[in-house]
Image (cartoon, rainbow, N blue to C red; front, top):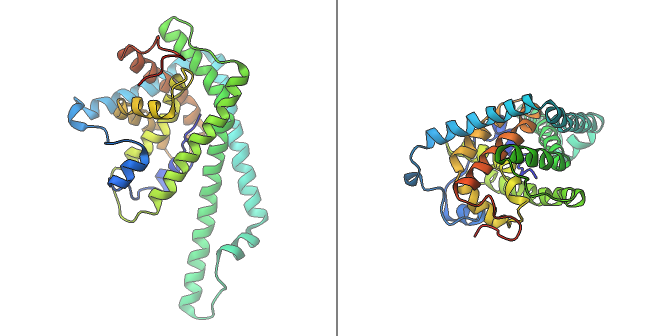
Length: 288
């Protein structure tokens, strides 16, 4: 699954580089696949919903603490992410001369040109460090999707006291392909947004939502819902999903916080399914 994750990889870097640009233009809204953004007037209290989402993350972490077998499982993605991060940074250290020669212009002789050259060199170093961090999160979420799916099923069964819709192991592995498509969508969207000039204060909100959406989505995906249906459904829980995602923006410890979000994300989506009487509507009854 992950988004983007969603991130998903570029979005996961928000605390470092993404206090930028998400103008609410018609083009942005159309590209995102919705006709309107969440209607604030129809929400009793966005702040309350954000708080509910943040609290649900803690409830999910507590559930994992009380079920140590599954807590141990979520450490696997953490290890995979750290391995990917070390590999990416090692690659850059080994080939930094080649990368810098490709990314930078020839060092000029003028004093101001030399200053500009070293400024750009510093920025390239920082960019590749962050790129390595983002790539490692991307790899972590793609490879961990079968683990997330399994834990999500267990959490749902525990909450509802009913067997969750179940996929075979082969179909569970196919989630990697679905995850890749979703991550590619969010990554492409991230690049487009980064190229739009201007500053918008809602960028952090959108970022938190997109990252958290990935963990929310498992309960819907295993019911066979289309991408369009899942996007339409999660909009109804926009602020709560955003609240859960705020935990995932804390710098440097995302390797630990992200895998823990699978329990809380499942709790949010299952409660939403119950609220809309869609919990029993499985593979043949996708939400419309």
